[in-house]
Amino acid sequence: VQLQASGGGLVQAGGSLRLSCVAPRRTFSWYRYGWFRQAPGKERDFVAGISRTGRDNLYADSVKGRFTISRNNAKNTVYLQMNSLKPEDTAVYYCAADATENLYRATATQAEYDVWGQGTLVTVSS
Image (cartoon, rainbow, N blue to C red; front, side):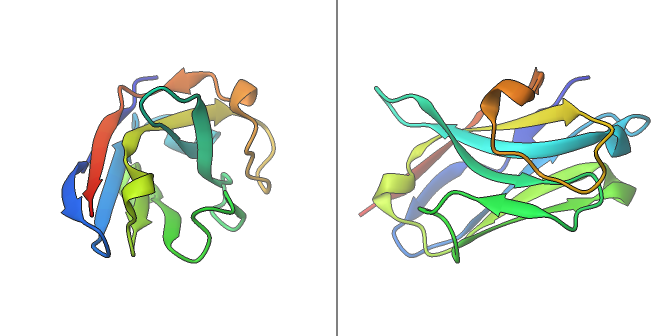
């Protein structure tokens, strides 16, 4: 499985961006997905996760109410809509996939994700 993340860029504080992560069509529905981020000099942290059905979502406390994760099975794409961006959201964002039989639960556990995309840089200026 290969994941292609895109949509990063430079935005002013308070602005919005939408990240996309495209996965292979044939196996897209077998996976739950997550977004993680890594700021310079820091560890990679969980941002958001979505179940295979799309009905269960998880968010880091720092992004709740501002970010929304979604999936479009017809387009084999996972999205991260980011609103009200802050300078502290600046990081490389990675999408990840976990092959699981569990249809209904998202996961925030980084070790459970076994496929990773290449990352896309988000820079939020103050």
